[in-house]
Length: 208
Image (cartoon, rainbow, N blue to C red; front, side, top):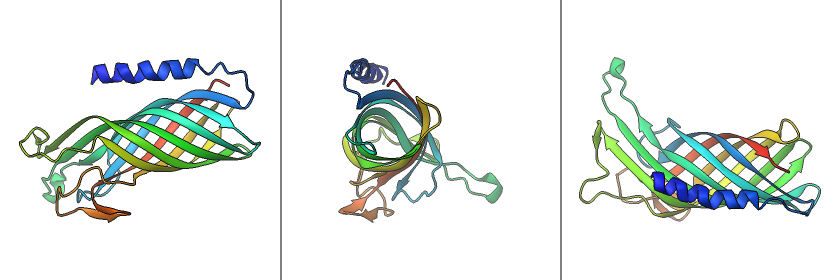
């Protein structure tokens, strides 16, 4: 995992430093925040799995109100179910799955708010799964997550000061991350399986 993170930031840093752009309509920055996630289809509901979100972005404002933003981000997702001993519920479950994602977002600016939406491709960096405190991700026949995923993002961004603000975003899978894993598989768009659903609250600093 450490080596993969080094590769991620090796790709990210040249992208950010290349943002000393001469055109007025270009800008770039860094972002970081927290993730609440669940996996639709694993029979455990609720955004109970906390994770981290961090990356950088390049934006192009082609009109006064409209623009495109390309991002490169590290994204922790998954699912969690803790026991509830008070109600004699001893079921425990944990699924961690980490991605590098490349979103392309259309943004529409209204005063100090920006509405954004667009797809993102995800590339699997690592995963871990346990049930009742026993690791199951290494067992023979384990149903591994897909190496490449496709998501859609919709959110709202607010500029607090000239170069600083926050972003609240909903990121959800368009394609299943794995299928035929449990009887809880759900249907979404084009087929059955399990799907990542995440809420992201992040803060950004814009260089220009």
